[in-house]
Length: 207
Image 1 (cartoon, helix red, strand yellow):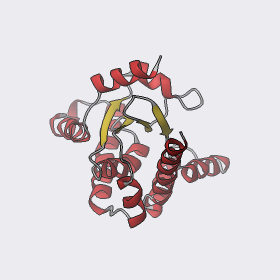
Image 2: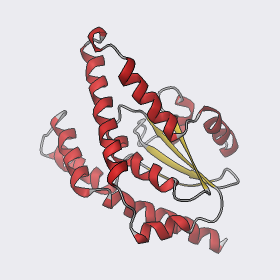
Image 3: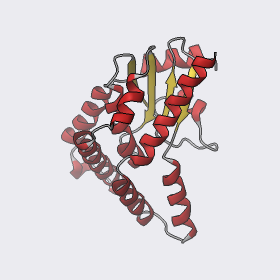
Image 4: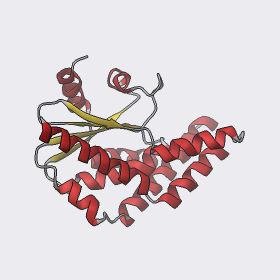
């Protein structure tokens, strides 16, 4: 699938971040938990907890001067696409940072794509053959892909490998992963974002 076709599908099917949050809030408000089976109730609780995490990060995150400088250095239009679902724990820990940074520069348009209802888009961004999320993809004004990131910071990937090597399994594994996120406070994610944007800008200067 060529870039223009992917991009057009993304724009057609995408949501704003505010719409994404509103859909999640409406789901939580209107769902009768008494009618949910055990699996559905578990998913409902994941979504509720994830929304709380996201709102906490959005409220407390204050970008450093370094990250402000790199975001403000984006001088041409970009589309930031995040493929996700509201039940995804990793997304709750990473998307709020990306969304807040996107608001800092009018050249950036953030689009949210729901993984499960857009398999054709998700299939273009598999991780080792899996539909892992979140995936963040950045396009330039010509709909060309500049870079992609996901589904979690490299240090978090290493933490998962370490925990699995110790024989730790779900749900304890994910509990420990979220403890890692809480202690890290976006440091690794923001460092990776900075490098990706700097590299893309330097590449464009060379071209």
